[in-house]
Image (cartoon, rainbow, N blue to C red; front, side):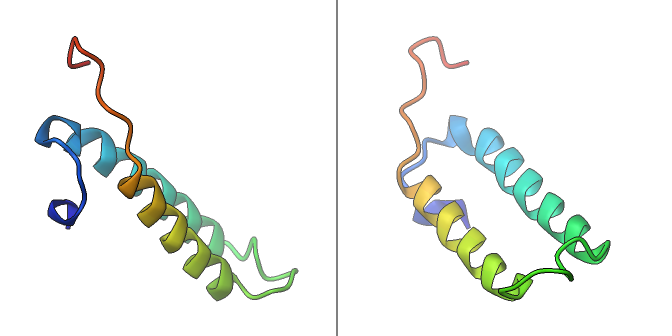
Length: 68
């Protein structure tokens, strides 16, 4: 999936961690019913999350010179 974004291979581990944290956090909160009390529905937010993650990956910062 990351091949479609301008990420150096050395940055893939960081991108996967960020994606995993965002997706896991959202799904855990949704499964716990944390979004049931408000509008718009969580599906709308899920779409926003996907759009935001896509924008983040497209604008990924240049890695530091030391590669860390």
